[in-house]
Image (tube, rainbow, N blue to C red; front, side, top):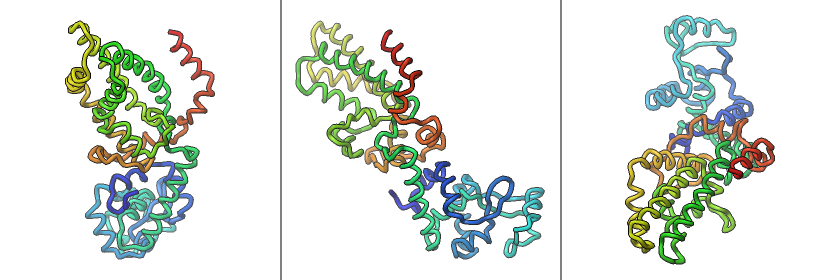
Length: 336
């Protein structure tokens, strides 16, 4: 995992994980003041907490103001400020009781600052403990199986089921419309993978450290599986049309040339961008797996994704398959 002080994406991944933040607030016991339904910290309290100077806090507010504000650093004015000053456990010294504006840090913003501070040993200790909490929460909510965290998404089963159907269309088309070649299934499957996420099957396996018995597609997110299915059914159609036009099977070279033309269709561009961003970002955040060829696509994991893969609606594949309602849906699909 990257050094939090230099990795804004990693910092935001922690701050967007409300399950980790709830555990951190309980276990870190950083103090603060209860105000307006939440815990907040004055600059004076932050200075004491991290054993730093007032000027150091101001420097980080100036250099990382947008990030800190996005995570709960706010300025109290007017009525809100007067209400805060009126709390019995609030003592303002350096900030001054007559100041018309007062900056306060939410608990989330304090953790944000702890992940930025390079001059504080106390902040370093908070970072270390916070990383432990994040890992503990992830392990607890996934049963320790982050390799298959993709399967906790309630969209995964449907995407996987549909992709298997389109995979059959794809392999049938390769059989029927491309000349016999023992490598054609591997070759054209890798062309699909490389077009979507720039990696061959072997490269993907290495990034995720998969065992030989692991099925690659069992680890893929629903959006990636759906895009693969679109490629497979679309290219199967193109193969059939081109074979009919020529009145014969295509050579491997002709098939590859057709695929090159097929993958260049503009309709794929936004879908590929979405798939690459989700794969690169989620795998780094949830699996600590870096797709080097997709580094440019890494973003912070949105809060909704933590609910999707760790929240109340997320379940293991075994739990979903034991649900009679889910089994009934798949039986209807199979009987169509």
